[in-house]
Length: 73
Image 1 (cartoon, rainbow, N blue to C red):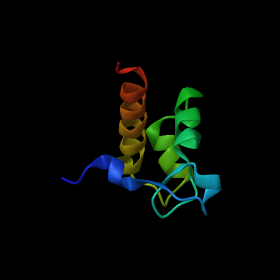
Image 2 (image 1 turned 120 degrees about the vertical axis):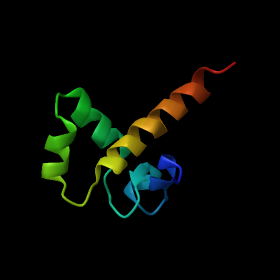
Image 3 (image 1 turned 135 degrees about the horizontal axis):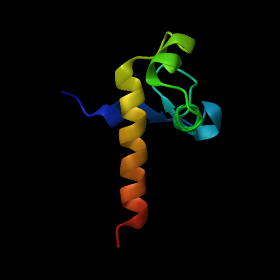
Image 4 (image 1 turned 90 degrees about the vertical axis):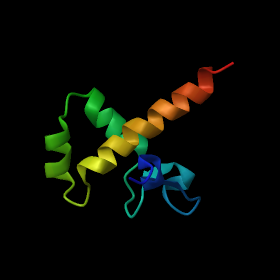
């Protein structure tokens, strides 16, 4: 299975270089804020039919990896 984080891209031409889900303009932060605000994965997928459950899981994996890198000393 390919690495979930491969679904996340950083392109200076898209959303000012913020991490986005490949093929969309939806940022990692957008999805994290929806989840933190109480939206379920099912709600997010209903609002954004171009997304998949794997995209949401990629966002979580990306955020977790970024957190690990920030605090690994």
